[in-house]
Image (tube, rainbow over all chains, first blue to last red; front, side, top):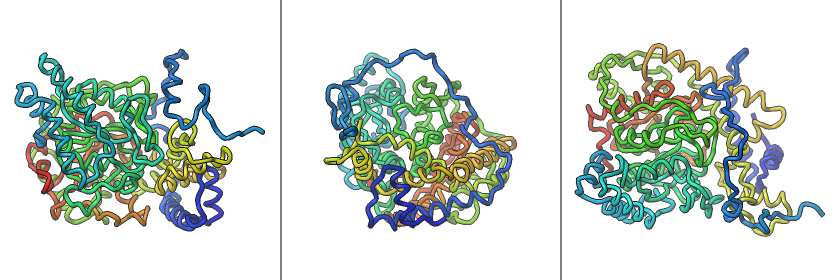
Length: 95
Length: 484
């Protein structure tokens, strides 16, 4: 499996990463090598095998739909890069 | 004082031979003197540690407290600690102080342990050499030109060098066991779900598990006793009874059935490590165990399978670092997309970006069945190998890592070569089984590890089997020169 610069650009965009032009060839080579390693899986016949979703085959535990956490907005927003009036600030998204 | 077992230290604290304050100051002084050589700590919490030690002394004077009261430990910097920075080895979280503590941290605090600080690690636990840390590599105390292993390399080096009595670690594909092997200490990865993941920064949620890193199996039993147990805040926490790990340590192992997977002793295993393993197997024979060869036919697929499952889960988990709610934010973003992209690119290092991109690719439209679904099916085959093996044997033994500690910089340019370091450890994570690493005889002056894999929730048996070896041999008592 070989990825090129344009594949790296597409993947980086999906992952919301900015990859500089100088880095693209290196990432293309590294990611291709990792996919070559992963390609060993193709030799295995997995017809009829159930995918393993949980190591202990446990079902997701559910709890009663009741509030368990107190409101700690100020504490949690205390570590945010930018807030105002209890809201997180981001660049303007609606003109 | 820094070379005693937890039981010896607890007895010394109770009899008044020394106080927790003295013990804590002793370790802080060692960190100050020796850690500039190792770089095993990212953040020291000296003031809080002294306060906790004074509190522990008050508890002890009242004749109260437990086996960990007043014992100085360190946490891998992946566990959230209220009031102490949690960086996860990343620039992304350089200034992150979590508003709450992980369950593991809370439990150890409640047990009276004194936290000296937070240990260095590969960035977001992605690495096998501790070289992906934003805070610089950790040096192996046995050879300062060599890596300590990873990702819990800081914890392993600090315990091996006697900078703390014990430390916590996490293991997604070998991150407790491999550094334990390379630094000559004991490390245990419990069954998936045995220890709460709440407040432990997520890498690959179906594989991540926390465990103790110590100088002996007996010490590991003391820590695990406190760390293990059901936690309603972790939806994958196992609600299974916990045995008394301490009282099970001395159980007779006559008749123990040990399986040696032939796939773990083939090409790629260092001959010195193979010889050290043989000596350990001979010890077990002397102790009354029976040895047989077994096969885990799908184990060569562990690494390829892991490098789909782990990056896929990592790409989802690390999507939360967006520069909005916490963590690094770029300067002057021109729009929201620029904010996301630049904050993430500046905050993450190259290995984390590689894994996020691999994960994004294998989960992207059109590729899911060929990669993620295929990997989850092979994971089932790998897990079935173990199920069949445990019908014949009680524990499985083999090497922890293919060799001893390699030189710093040796594998940093070749991600795939680095990944192959975890060739023997990954299968236990994929299957969710408990596994530990205990020191073998050193090979050319460097530590090597024996891996012991057990059946689900058999941590007590693993500790017992490891402890019996440590009673019969003195391999775990070897200490790196210059750190006596």
